[in-house]
Length: 536
Image (cartoon, rainbow, N blue to C red):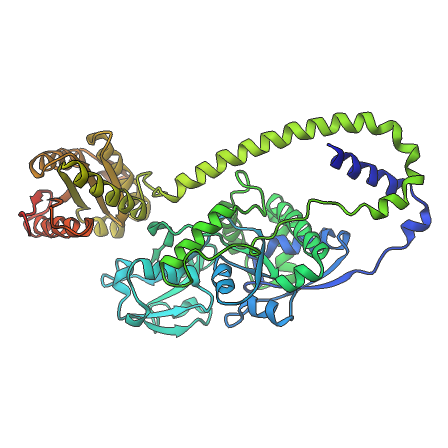
């Protein structure tokens, strides 16, 4: 309470102070900010902070350094060329490798980083990239983690340096690193077929654009970092609330060649990834950074249990009141407002408690999102495998049977090609719901990627698992998806059944047998259930 009293008291003192004080404006501090990429809506918040005078009010004269394909923002900051930069979750990897970087504020809560592959029957999953050409950015750590966790080593890829030219896709490049905010728009407009491989399908849900600095800058001038952070957050809030105005500003001052439609597409996607209605701009959670570091460590990109000490910026909560003591003589005239201030503080405390409760709920929701497939609502691949490993241990301790189903929707690629991804998505959602309706409360269904699903059946032998699989198969045939002017789309599924056996080292052995049974189901006509032979 006293802290807010002091702040408001200080503001009144400044307003009632001698006019001579007001005339002595200190010179603006020259600051350089290294952007992550070329001028576009991705940097709209920084443009807004300049245009609206937020940086100037904070005593800063900010110069924006445009990004380039071969320029890593952390190199600009570490070399002293810029005091601040915009990076991604790979900042923690660079810190682990000796660069003393500090994350100041997270701008984008969900990373837009994906792999885009050309259309074609030979590339339907991320594993099919083996032997193909990948145009890879220098600081694409999270995509390297994605490939590592999917067991696609760089040695099996033909890597070429990133040149920022999406038009090479399908010519001399089979896949490239990209942002969902940009390249998909260009490819759709050009009519180029492509596939999206998103790390979130493997449970990699990292932070996106993040304002950062170096330990040297923070130690030398903590007030500069605090001012830069606060003004930048104000700029992003303004940009999100004035999208059309920002598009006009970008086209007028920063990127005249960008058309309005593309900037509007980018703005919509950035807002979706920032989720400003759920998470305050600039907010970052230490537990999620810990999860990100563990993900990179699991992929072999950094040491395990790397400490986060010093990596996350912590604003100094203790105000410097020395200047206030010198102005107390001029503050006597404002004593009568203290009662009103105390009432205001009481309301702020109530709002603060409400905000703390809201953030706790949000953190719980984010934990759920990290373990759930965003399209179908069932467990994602990583979470399902974690459940399977725990369940196999429990089954062995209690001497109970355990069975698995591997399921693949029939002719799903043909559905996508003929009717589009929107219809394909409805098929996936409908099938996931049908599975859940046929399963028991202790069974677990997960989407492993694309049209492949797996089911974990505790306390269930192979014959009982086959009966459940038949129920799911019949339920799938009852799914109908309306087609625009073309009637209804019918769906079927092929299923492989296997039991976890005493000699299995882990769940992968049972999955391999179930997958082989699934292959037989496909080869013998689809829309059927095949059981793996014991020990197969």
